[in-house]
Length: 103
Picture 1: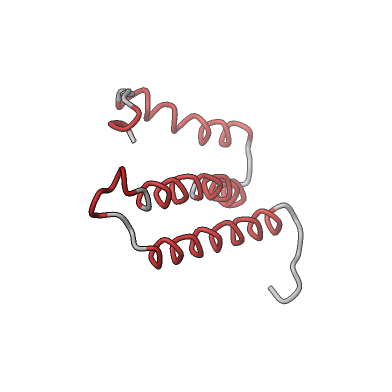
Picture 2 (picture 1 turned 135 degrees about the vertical axis):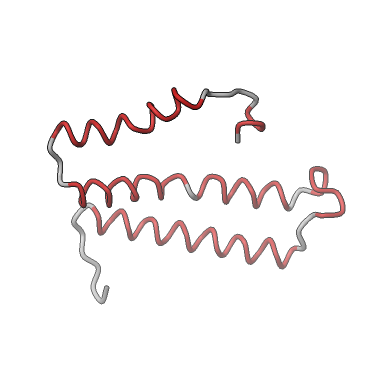
């Protein structure tokens, strides 16, 4: 993404920024396993955004030229993106204490 958004963050500020949540969790005495699971749930929120953007980019003939996706490939990609969204919804529901029958 760094080249796409046209700005750079130095390696040390980036490392410090990514370590702050972990240091905060340690300082607060949170359960490490539960905190790790919750962090992965939060990260799963970000997955649909690049996937959907990638689908939009690769189906656009003006951007991709001769490398544009076929409609069948785009349809399959949309189904995959929809599956990711549904699985995220189930994950969020279960993480927040809900129980789905049969799962």
